[in-house]
Length: 276
Ligand code: PXL
Image (cartoon, rainbow, N blue to C red; front, side):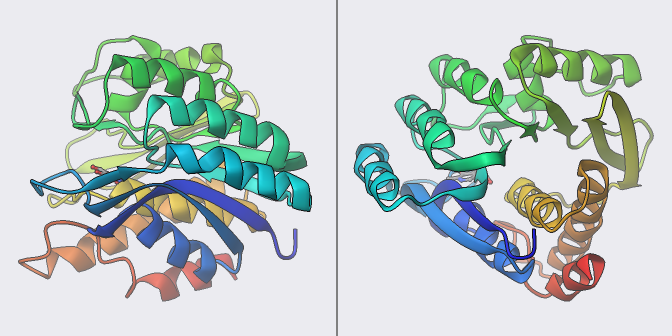
C-alpha cells in the first residue's frame, strides 16, 4: 500500500500528550494519510489531572458516518483508541462495516484500563461493549489489565508464558484474529510484547524503564499502526513500536516536571529511519 488512508477514532485530550494529539502526528510522520473521528473532547486526560471537562461526541457520529457513506469514503485501515461511551462502540462497529474498504484492517486498542484498574470514565457495561468491538478486530492491542477485563481472567503482576497464552486464547475466543499484548515482562528490568499472528506467539523483550507515563500506550499503538500499514507484519510493527516507545519514555525521564505524557516528538526521526 503506497499511500494508505486510515481513520483513527479516539478522544482529543487538549493537554496531556495522549490519544489524538499523539496518534495524528505519529501516523503523519509514518507517511500515512490520517483522517480523524474525535470520540470526545477533554480539557486534559483523566489520569492524574482532576476537574477535567468531558464532552462526549457520541451523538455526532451517525451524521458524520452517513455523510462519509454518501461520499463513498473508504479507509484502508481503522484504528480505534479511547472511546467516549459504551453506546459509541456500536456506532464504531457499524463504521467498520461501512467505511473499511474490502480487505481493510481494523485495529482496536481497547484503551480503558491500566495497573489492574479501569480508567475513571468506564464501567462493566463499557467492557462488555468493548468485547464486541474486539470480536471483529483484525488486531487487538491490549495491555495485561485490559486483556484480563476482556477475558475475565484474573489480573496478575507475576506470571509465566502459560498465563500470557491463556489471555491470548481468551481474546481469540472473543473473535479477535491477531493479538498484540503489551507490557509483558518475565524478568526483572525487562518488559516486552507478545504477538499472536499466523497461528503462533512470538515475544519481543525490551528494557523496562522505571518512569512509565500515561499516554505511552497511545504512542505504542500509533507507531504499531503506522508501521503495519506501511507494510510491516504484526511482529515487526510491534518491535519497531516498542523500540520507539522506549526511546520516548527515556526522553521524558530527562524532564522532571513532565509527568503527564511521553515526549514523543523528538524521537520521531528514529521512527522514520526504522520505516525506511
Ligand atoms: O492514553 C489513554 C487515554 C486516552 N484518553 C484519555 C485518557 C487516557 C488515559 O487515562 O484519560 C482521556
